[in-house]
Structures are given as C-alpha cells and as structure tokens.
Length: 258
Length: 276
Ligand SMILES: Nc1ncnc2c1ncn2[C@@H]1O[C@H](COP(=O)(O)OP(=O)(O)OP(=O)(O)O)[C@@H](O)[C@H]1O
Ligand SMILES: [Mg+2]
Image 1 (cartoon, each protein chain N blue to C red):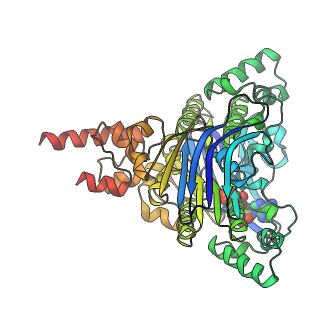
Image 2: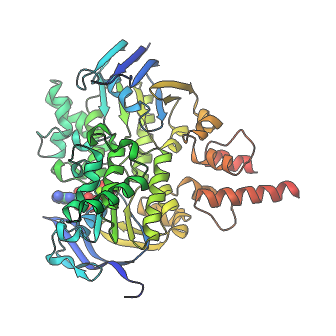
Image 3: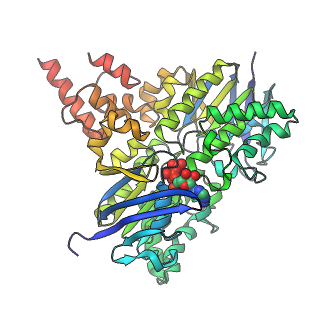
C-alpha cells in the first residue's frame, strides 16, 4: 500500500528547457518517513510541490509521468509567512481554517484544533493575532494548521528552519509520532544531523535526479560527505582522516572511540 | 574612540501594546566583534533587530549606534552605519535582478555609479553570487534570497551588520560561504550581531554569545564556554551543537567547538593512541 507514488516523474517549470526533476520514482507508504537531502537547488522543494499537487497546478509548468496520491495531503512550505490564510484574527481561527474548509462539524474542528495547538505547544498563543507572531511562533502555527486537517500524507519543507533547538527537537519527535499513527511523511531539511533519529529512508537528490536512496547510514558515506550532505560527526571523522565507516551521530562516535 | 563601540543597549525596554518583548536589556558590542544573539522562539531577538535598524524605538532606555542615539533616527538615517537582513528577507528584495537589488542600498545613499558598481561586485564576490546576479530574486530559493539580501547589506559597507537567521534552509556549502564572508567583513572592523538558531553556524563564525530569555538578558559569554555546557544551555531552550557535544563526550583536550579545531584534535589524539 502506498500513500504517495511517483512513477517516472519529470517536471519543467514554465519557460525553462531543463527539467527541475527528472525520472523520479518514489513510494511513500503509511508510517514511512522519507527525507530528501541535496544541495540547494537539487529539487527537494519542487518534489514536495509535485507531491502536494501544487506543481504544476499552481506553479505552472509541465509534468510527465504519474503522481498518485490516494489521500489527503498537507504541506508546510519553507516560507511559513506566505501560508497564513489572511482570514483569521486569532491563532485559534487560523488553525481552524483548514478543518473548517473541509466542512467538518464544529465539535470535530474544536477537537482537532485544540489537539494541534497542544502538540505544537502553542496553547498560550491561541487568542493572539497571527500577523504579529515571531518567526518560530508562526512556523508552529502553520504546522499546527496542517496537522489539524488530519492529513494522511504530511509534506514538510524545512519545517524547523525558524525553530529554536528545543522546538526543533520537539517537531522531529512529533514527526516520529505522526508516522507511528500511520501517516506517510515526506520531508526536506538542511538539518541532516536530525535525520538519523527521524528518517526511515534517505533520498539523495542531485540536479533533479535521485543519486542514491537508502537507510540513514547513507549520511555517513564518503560520497555524501564529499557533497556536503553527511552528518557533522561523519564529516568530522573524515576531516580527521580517521578510518571509515564513519560514525553517524555523537552516540555512534562515542561507541567507536572506546 | 580607541576600541570603538559599534552598538550599545542601555536599559532598553520595549512592548508591542500589552505584549512585553524586552525589559532592561543592556549590552555593548565593539567594532570588529562577532556576536551571536540566541534564545527561544519569542525571546525578543527580532525585536532587538528592529530596534537596531530603527524600525521601532525603545519605550525606556536607549540604543546607540556608535555615538548616535537612535531615538530620533529613522531607518534610512541609520543605513549609513547599519546593514541588516530581516528574518523574512522576502520583503527586502524588490528589484528585477539580484544585481540591481544589491546595488540599491549604495545607490540610495547617493554614491556615484562607479562606486555603486564596485560595492555591488565586491558583495556578489564575497558571497560567490555572480552566477545568480542576473536572476530575478523571486526565482531564487527562499534561503538564497536571504543570501542575496545579505549581499545587499554588505554593499552598504556598514560598521554594524545585524542579521536575523541568515542561514535558515542553507546547505553546508552555502553556510560556509556565508561564514567566510562574515568573518572577512568583521576583520575589516565591522561589528556583527547575528540572530541564529543554528548553533553550529554560530560556533564556526562568531565568538561571543548573548542569550535572551523571555525578553531579558540571561547570559553573555564566550561561545566556546557556553556551547560546551549542556546544563547552562538547557534552561535557555538551547542544545549543544554536534561538535561541542562530541568534544565533551570524548573529553577532547581544549574542548574545541569548531569543526577544523576538532578535526585536528581528534586526529592528534587518535594518532597518540595508536602509537602507544
Ligand atoms: N507586532 C507584534 N505585536 C504583538 N506582539 C509581538 C509583535 N511582534 C512580536 N511580538 C511578540 O514579542 C515577543 C518577541 O518577539 P520576537 O519576534 O522579538 O521574538 P524572536 O526572539 O525573534 O523569536 P523567533 O526565534 O521565533 O523569531 C514574542 O512574544 C512575540 O509574539
Ligand atoms: Mg525572530
């Protein structure tokens, strides 16, 4: 069973000759957490837009291949400030905006909104005007708004970019628990150090194509370190010219060192 | 002024209506100093950036840029000394090409065309942005747009550079480029005040950490010391970055927090072990 399936997908932005994505085949099933890594511009954000059905529908451009999405998808963009509805005067109403559009009964909306606010630890912000929040407060509100819609497919583009280190950890834990509830998660992040504890599968994108796919241990391999995509600890081991295989995390390194 | 003061907060308080954002904040930053401004979401970091750039003014206390009291100054006055990148830098770019955007500041300050061109080229160089110079800012990724805004700030050749999350979403190669450009700028005598949640980037680039906690100054000390102390960081919502955590976990001599120092130390200690 798969929640998201991409079959040989190629995508061109409007008025460009070279595709932004080329021959991508990828499945994400319930309970899976798949992380896209790559240098800036490698196509991770575009892939998420395609997965969400926003490309080409909203971006324009052209798509070849097939995208199947048997479920409700929710996407968190890397620019949370562009994602506010503009229709809500309180954080509570902002988070309720998606669920209300789904036509749910009032009690279901309330339950989902309250739960989402709790999960993102933003209950105290409920009556604030969303237009006046700090960067990280806003990013939490946007994530809460997506979760409140109870999507089966959760798409996250740099979901921790504006979060403080503790908040980022909390969001990564939340991602794990969403997968535990059977949701499919596809995400992109430049915080590769978080991935060994979060992702089931890593997809390495290079110039719009899949260069490699595998377990998080991929993030300690020479080729990824070379591309600047290895974990900090793997990279450090390599820089110190210590023998491979490189440790992936601080915990691995401590074990190796003994 | 000998070791001249680039920035000073003196007993500053600020509220947004009934939301108190800062209370009694005092600190100074000297010319050439590289300072990280850290703290939880909502701690008041961006509010400090808005005060430094003159977008808002203190309710109490004062903010000094060098020997200017900002009380009666507007952002366009301060632009002669302060270059800035805001947290959501999208609102900062509006020209048709990145090159035009980078040149906007020096042009607005009234420099002749040749000087504008020199500054624009140098700023694009410093961040290795020439390949993107003719692109429309909106065709850049949000993370790169921020690097573009940083180039615009560098082109002002300001004595104080204030940056709000300059590396969010950047890959490691770009982060390293930004780090190099910032260090070079500081070597030429400019002060840096950098808001960041990326403590690894802070460790590589900056030297002193100021931490805000719910609008108050909770700590001000060398980053090496701060980042290797998990107990100090925890109540402030911070977590040691991987290199600092590893330094402590492996008990590396000198507790390095920068990757290059740690790699040297690690290689040396490992070499010593295999020899014995
Ligand atoms: N325009 C505004 N009106 C009301 N409250 C505001 C406004 N702007 C900010 N605040 C509040 O002031 C406090 C400090 O906000 P600030 O933006 O300075 O935080 P920050 O440290 O930059 O946080 P982050 O890391 O999330 O960006 C927060 O509680 C925020 O909600
Ligand atoms: Mg902020």
